[in-house]
Image 1 (cartoon, one colour):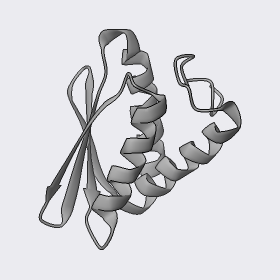
Image 2 (tube, rainbow, N blue to C red):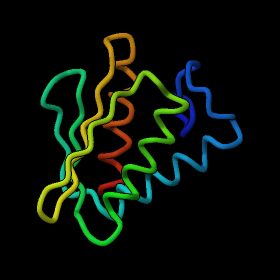
Image 3 (tube, rainbow, N blue to C red):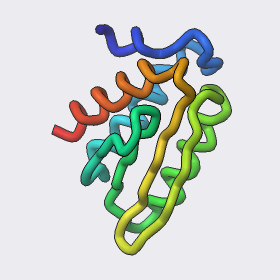
Length: 109
């Protein structure tokens, strides 16, 4: 599967901007991801190492992503030395969440 093949048609981010957004997510995951889990089929949980600016960075990225991919529901929960990011989707977008989980796990390695 190509890098962009999993991006659904309902994403309204201009095509030329999509690789840049993916790179932002990849950078966040490679720098901060400590663990990921799938507590429910339609929810992905990412634990991100905290630190100066991490929560603001996550919230900014989530806000921009919500603007173009309204099928995602993001919940950001700051904890001591950790930012928990829950990403949920409706059943119609389970394959997108699957692809995101696979990509995230690959970046973590």
